[in-house]
Amino acid sequence: MPSEMFIKGFRYELSNRAFALRVMQYLAKSSEGYEQFHLWSAYLALEQFNEPRYQMAAAYWGLDSPPSCWVAFKAWTVRLVPRTFHSALLKCVHAATVAYVDQLKVLRGEGPSAAHSFLSYMVAQEELQVEMMERAMAGRYLEIERLVAEFIIKSAVESPAISSLSPLQKA
Image (cartoon, rainbow, N blue to C red; front, side, top):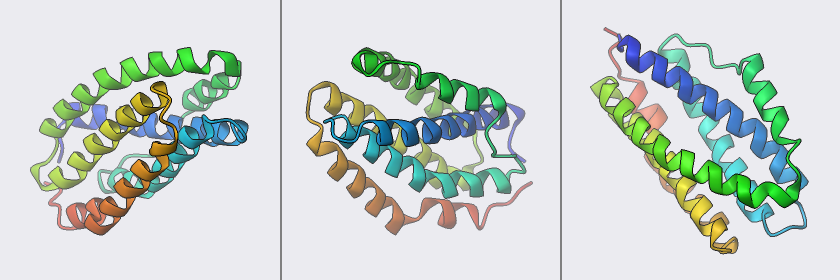
């Protein structure tokens, strides 16, 4: 069984993924017609791709994956941020995400060795988010959709959630 530290960290990551999915659904819809749409729609595609992988991992480790009321509330508050502040918000989120990648690398090290492929995917998708935000902050929005599409195709072929979790030993 994974350590308590790992379970706590992975619950936090599950919460982050649920939050991101809800926020991206809103941002993608509300940014149609703006250049930021390329970022938010690609981000939404990534979160939709992540969802079944994370649900599988959560179920395997006996964790509930539905978002809490707190996650729903935090996601709702993003709607209150006027579009004129989205660039500033993106810079703050970028800085936090860069730091969070390091936390996920530690979490990967704490995780079961048999789940290394999935946990490496977990880190890689977060690193992709950093790259997406950096391209958006540089005004390179049109590159983001292709970047995410290539990541999804590569990850679907490698199928980390299915291939790395199915043979896991729980003990």
